[in-house]
Image 1: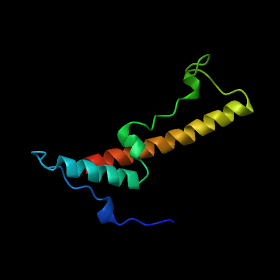
Image 2 (image 1 turned 30 degrees about the vertical axis):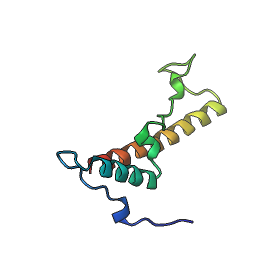
Image 3 (image 1 turned 180 degrees about the vertical axis):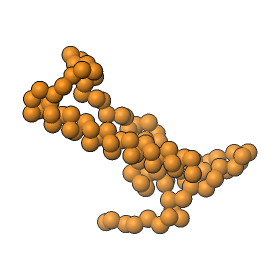
Length: 96
């Protein structure tokens, strides 16, 4: 099912200066980030996509030369954009 989550559910409480509420903050942060589909960005399991130019035998001046390489580069660009969005949302959740 495609459930729309309310803003209250996704809201993370402020962490108290004395960190007395650390466990509550941590749990709510994890729940909120997980509900948005980005828990891997918070726990470090979602790795940044590897630029195909940085693969062995290639380099910064690498240019795709065939259909497969063009597709590989397009897939990397799409995955990289998605990864950056996940990172930004996760950072925003931590900072808010």
